[in-house]
Length: 299
Image (cartoon, helix red, strand yellow):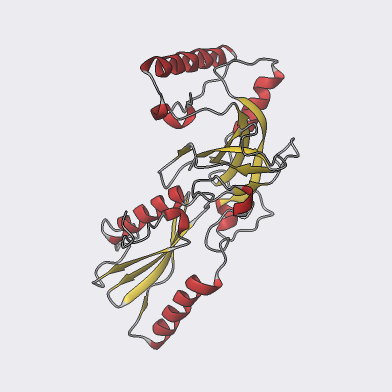
């Protein structure tokens, strides 16, 4: 690239986003209260990319201007919440507009704009070879007492807005100063309150005294105290409703690579074969995986 090339901008560097539409008819919602196929769908797509590309983000804040009207939108793993629509032609609307822009630009913190409150941005000195990706310090997960730090780019990131929002990172123990030290895998994913956690399944497997080379080995994992119900200002001390989502995090090993990173077709076929054998082994134990996908198979 030449020196005159504009700097690249990535979703991981953005705290919020703004969409501007020319007409008041570009409202994000229809008369029956659903997202419109125009600006509503466009904003949902921005939020999807924002939550996929800006890692450890538990919700995405958007600001929509359509004609002389505007509103704010907060997208999470269960849907969207919209503020009342205000008008720039109204004095209260104009005052609110400038307060909103000022707050987004200068006042609101990263956590208030959607960063997972249970992780900490790592200083660049801890990850000098992180290839431009931000690194995060992960607090201990039961039953382990290790602090972890993410290393380089995620191995896999879900690009869906709703659902589990899975993100898989390589990571190492924070106490290890050597970037080449042993690495594990961090899996960050949402789950419904009524479903067993992934860590619970791994613990059940370990309690049966078994292991299989086609199945990852569990080190630690737990719900991290973040739920959609809590984010939506419900009482955090009350158990979330059965259909709410909670954030679950686990550390497993060994480190692999995504299926599309295979070097030879033989390597890919061996990976499929081992995964099938692991799947059969789980079935014989009475466990059906039910979520076979590229995000859950690594070489």
